[in-house]
Image (tube, rainbow, N blue to C red; front, side):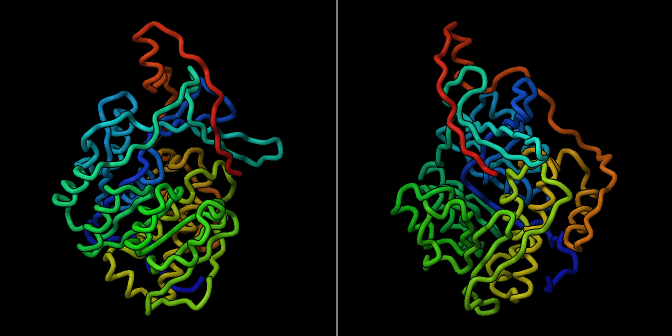
Length: 374
């Protein structure tokens, strides 16, 4: 890979990233060991902003957290990594989204993961995503510092208000849809977005995105095959899809969250100066930025949980290992980091169980709803 490669970890000042979308409590369970649960702040938006904070950004999620046990876990974890919580408790508040990630290790040494949306203890549905409302978005838009990046992964009127306000202040709008949702709002989101990123696993649901007229850069991730992209910016324009191969980890412990690391990497490399910097990037710089995102994604796959590596090694080891991946010389390193994974928790943090305990009643189990990723 050719292109600008001075120091991909370098940062100028404290660029601001604002985002809204899925910020959730991730509960990671390996090999059906339900008594050993690890808790992380997660969700696509939550992961991207936390990773950017780890890389030196001032990251501001716009969300609707209340004071429930799950919210306290998420907010404590975000605080641990320096995420700014000024806009994390907009009104009206809502129950914290909770997502169960179940990791399975196969006999052949490969892994897979499933996402479940029902409680491990009582089987009831876990809380889902609730969008920031129109009025709260207007209030945040009036208060937020001039961001260099605005990130959204769900469409809502509030998200579009924030995206337009951020774009007016020179921010790059990154749209990473999980689905179409309301078609009219989805079209509005495409119109305001500068960068559209999606997985090829979503192509049936998001068909026709290649022809989207709004985003200037379109990125389609291809899992272990890397990614492909198109750009309409004059300095880095492409006439057809350009492919970038995936970078290789030593071993894959869990692929969940790799796309979030890829997004944060390309944002860090290309968007520190907002739209001005992205427009001025050369074709080589654009490829180098996307390749940096691929290297972060590969590194992430060596750890369980969407951001597990952040807890397992220190920052110095992280930089060393990603640098090895970029150089194509990945080798085992001393991982005697100064951080530790979150420990197991005995209690269930879902409101369904809290209600059961308060009322002394047993909730009927429901069949878990899961999504599988290989």
